[in-house]
Image (cartoon, rainbow, N blue to C red):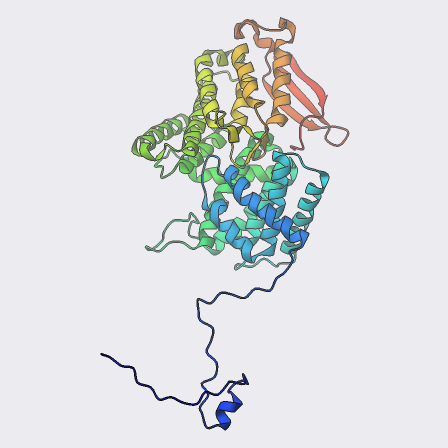
Amino acid sequence: MLIWQFRRTRRVKCDETHPACKRCTTSGRICDGYEPPPANAEPRFIAVVPSPVRREESRSLRYFYEKTVSQMTTFFRDEFWTRHVMQVADSEKCIRHSLVALSSYHESFSSPKPASRNQFALRHYNMSIGGILKSLRTADNAHIHLMSCILFICIEALQGHISTVVHLVKAGYRILQEQNKNQPAKNDGAKQGGKPRSDASAFFGFADRFLRRIIAQIYMLIRDLDPDITAIVTSILQPSEQSRSFDFASLADAHEGLSDIRLQFERCDMRGLVGKVSAWSTAFEEFKSLNSAALTSRANKRAVALLELQSRYCAVDIAISCAGDQADQLLWDRYIGAFTDMLGYAEKAMDLHDQASCSPQFHMHSGTVPVLYGIIAKCRDPTIRRRAIGLMTSRPLQEGVWNNNLVLGVARRIMATEEGSLGPWPASCKDIPAESRVRSIAVAAGAGDNQYMVGYQLGRGWRWEESDYIADCV
């Protein structure tokens, strides 16, 4: 039997004098001081009544995490939205204010709220702007400045302030170029030397993809009206001018490759485009075959359908451009079957069977809106046109700088211009003669705020109308 032996000593009550008890020391004992609290001790909190302002901030951040992030990753998941930006917001006030503002504006977009909600959002937006303006940009904090710029772009796009988005994109691209000069290695978030890249380096890779995406959207709207945007587009396309092969590691990679092809087409640069489209399609089919088991989630199904939709429309656009006279609007009538297939993919990409997906949608990718607009404008089949309009009006959509209500008014006006003399319902696309078809559209500023002149080029010349339904897009 094991016995613990000890010698009994007289107990002296500690008088809690620091650093050693006086009663111990005066009685000849050695006071060992006071043990630190155990590591697993329950923390002691001071009760603080939260202020209404802090409660509102917490609520907005929760909405961002639960709602905004979900919509930002509608098609393609990225750790910037799911993890990185929230981590940075814990330590950077300007980022936290930006998230609160973006979340509040997003909530107002999703379900209209009283004016006080936008005032709250504007207050935090201004605090974020003020905070970043007070911070001198250095190599160490460049990622914070660029992250702020990206969040500002999202806020302005959500409000339809496209001219401000253009200025912010140019500012963000300058920051990115300076960073690339300081760190020549490509910021693609990949591993180097067997070691994972840092979060900051991974962020610059995300920023590069994000800005390229928004620049492509802007260029599709304004073309060569802004020389700075045109110069950026030229620099983006230079590395991919030659024919290239594609090898996709993710759906986002496939989307990026297709976006570059589309951007080259918008520049009217047809060099090697047919070969690139063919190479992209082959690589995409291989990717789907190799990853079929991983592409079964609802989000991945939406992304696959979106890529099928965009690639098919792009292929038709390029085929018509290569067919000869691009002014011959009758060429589009050959692709009625292709347009029908595209609408099927559009329905899958919009996921209209999901109740949550039927609510207003906001994300920064180029989604279904520009393709649906193109179908309404170029396909003269009355059934297909009205089916595309039905999809466009199914819910509010803000896809980067593309807003469905912004382009829907123009698309409907094109349809009315072409079908106006044919009665309420043309029988087929053959009923619309070539001289009545709209070839192109131009937008110019009008006399007042949010007033625009919209020009429609027909076979017999241009026709201009005043309009107030086009947002601030130039």
